Image (cartoon, rainbow, N blue to C red; front, side):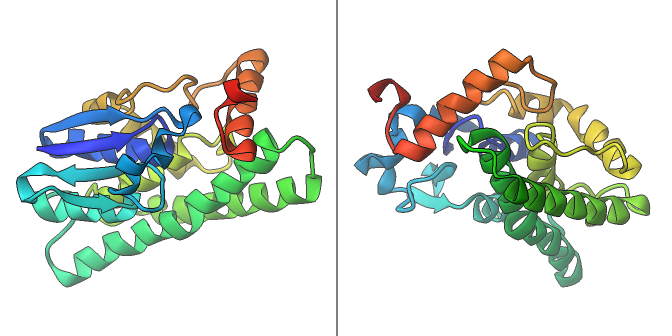
Length: 236
């Protein structure tokens, strides 16, 4: 049994989607990030970096794995699914997984900080990160022009990238210019396992759908309080 420590974020949903796709039994341990559950000693013993997600494989001697990309690889190798076994096929998946880990995730994360969370609007920073997100989306669109999925068959690389790209509206970045990326986003969103996975746990705000301004502002304020002050919003 896999024990998943998580919250409703793109990185968290990568793992719940993968577990649903793989059909691996798991239990959900939802951490309240606003209350800093992720910084408590019990969780730091599992992930010393104090971030979600993390897993504990109870069937493998309580083996703990942190970092979402490492978890995806572990689960794929454990199950023998969502990643080819041959060296070239595995490498293709790893390349696009690293593309997300080193590019899409960090750039969209910074776009979120400056576009949504930072109290002052620093337009050069907003432009910088939104432009880089757009460039990365163009790279994905180019790959998807001639491929149904990023690395051949549907894989953990698709799950990792999709979990972030689906939230492009929250980063203030459009995908209108990328028809192949839009096709891929829609196709993955329609998968039953994906639909189940993004509800484990459900998000306060569905970041792949338009949100009214008041709700979006309240959600952004909550996150800003958590990130900037390093303590729960209600303690401010």
